[in-house]
Length: 376
Image (cartoon, rainbow, N blue to C red; front, side):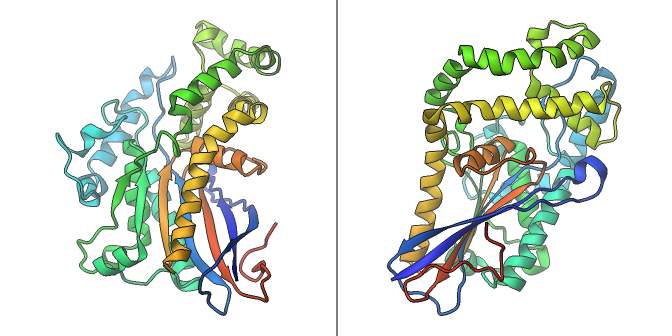
């Protein structure tokens, strides 16, 4: 009888705020049992890594954005003129009618919601850090890859149908394996659109969950706990911009102002208001998960079953490997709630979550591998 421990390891990077990288780690482990052949020494058998896209331009312009539009256009164009953008089709094996770009949700709304070169560098650094761990420390990945290794290890990255997540996957993979570590150098780890991204990586997009969400947002409880708490902050912002308060979205405001601050651009509001928006944003997006078990279950269950199936297949086939997911802050937020983990801060650009399957054998008992990760 073989036991394994699944360890979840979180990394949060805050380099887009103050230029300094800060990390906060939470580890969580639980037993996972299966009948198969085991190694003698506990080691990582399979890992799934979910990361948020990198730094991007605002999702939409604020009322005073007109003077900043040229700046955001420059940020967007720098990425479009980069090598990463020119190589985008090399990561996809499928032929797309009209080209890959035509299949992406946000490709035509430039300069809004576009990955920046800074965001690409964030993901390259994240990929390089994973390389150091998974090659030098864990030995689960080889130092040089070829087509045979990619197939044997099942190396691939899933992405949602957004240009910023596709490019983030490319940047991450280029940090994981540089040109000199790919044989031949023109070899690319494949990126695929997730077949069920609306059910797993973008849970809020499905019809069932949208209906549940609408019911929650129209409830008296939401009015009492959320709507009333929003009013003072939104009134302050609406008065400044001279717009109707009903036109303001806390999430969009929060994201747009974070973009400005990360690029050292002028923000018309104090840190106190920005902190209020941060707390309100977390409160609004957490409320449906905390108040409706049905909403939480329908949101998280599809992804939980997917990671479980990957792990079961890896045990059944005795196959080590890593799968990557390029997704969004709301994806990580949903997973945290699904695992009942405390959310200390909102997932920043290039934040990533590792879900690691360890193989153990010790008199039919599950071991916590404390020498490699501090288990909580």
